[in-house]
Amino acid sequence: MTLLRTLGIDLPIIQAPMAGIATPALAAAVANAGALGSISVGATNAAGAREMIAAVRARTAHPFNVNVFCHRPAVADEKRQSAWLARLSPHFARLGIEPPATLSEIYRSFVEDDAMLAVFLGDKPPVVSFHFGLPAAPRIRALREAGIILLATATNLAEAMLAAQAGVHAIVAQGFEAGGHRGAFDPDADDDCLGTLALTRVLVRALDLPIIAAGAIMDGAGIAAVLRLGAAAAQLGTAFIGCPESGADVGYRQALMSDAANHTVITRAISGRPARCLHNRFTALAAGIPAAAIPAYPIAYDAGKALNTAARLCNQAGYGAQWAGQGAPLARQLPAAELVRTLAGELEQSWNPQRYL
Image 1 (cartoon, rainbow, N blue to C red):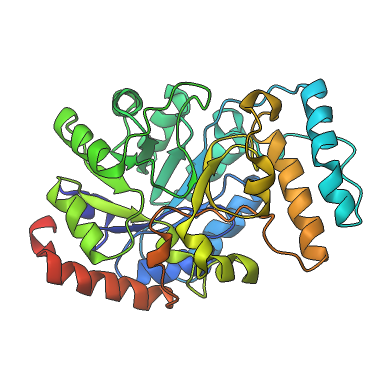
Image 2 (cartoon, one colour):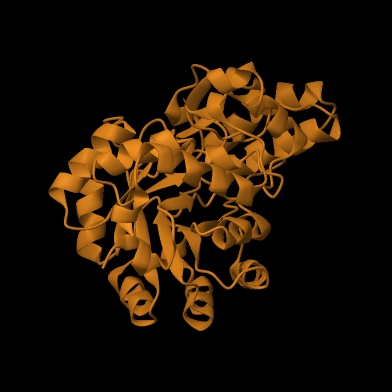
């Protein structure tokens, strides 16, 4: 059975589950257009996840994907956290706002979130995807037995092999070009920085599972390119940020359509894990800061979000998590359904998708 039939979609296009950006309205619009829409519940709790799933279902009868974070739960380091707040204090001061007194772990990992698992087993979203790692075998088994299709992100062959052995149905091959957080299982391990094309081809040849290519794919020509390498589908994130249904704020949208799109950088400073972002005020202040000085994910994100909130209160953009991939200069501002139709038309011109149906 092909991946498209497994997922119940018509087009080899998956909208990436970008936390805070991939709204239920965006996911539903993409799903209604024949692709796989996605939401991320990694930044909310079980109750919030249930509301988001219901919101998608209220807008579409088509399959959709729900993403969770499977990071190693953070270990607090009060000395490091205090030093980090002290480092950021001048930036808060320039905004006329006091920094937080303390930092906390603002997101709970799915690896220990029994309430989130219960939501999935009860509500049975069609697809669940894992980022930053994998949950334990009993959780994967329970999800599979509930009839849920499982995807997992991998940034190298070793991670992909672990995911395949764990029992997922398909692997998202996240190239180094991709926007947002690297899906690396261990953020402190050496990163081979494999690009999307190389990683996709390596995984296609090594594994007997469908491979979904992700990273700097912005148009139908890009989708066609990874299909030619053997990918079963392409996952696009940055391409959908400019859609009116996305959760991106005005500053983020303006930055994406500016020269900043030509200058993305990998930084740990915003959240505590490596992530590709538009070059902005936060990435500039973080330049040269060693990883050892930054609190663990997602504790560091508590400070990052506080600084961004303070800046927005002062009508200043550029301190947010303006995640974007290296394909950002190709971004378009189109309604989600129109963008999917455009992508499908471009793909048709470059490659006959019928052989993938």
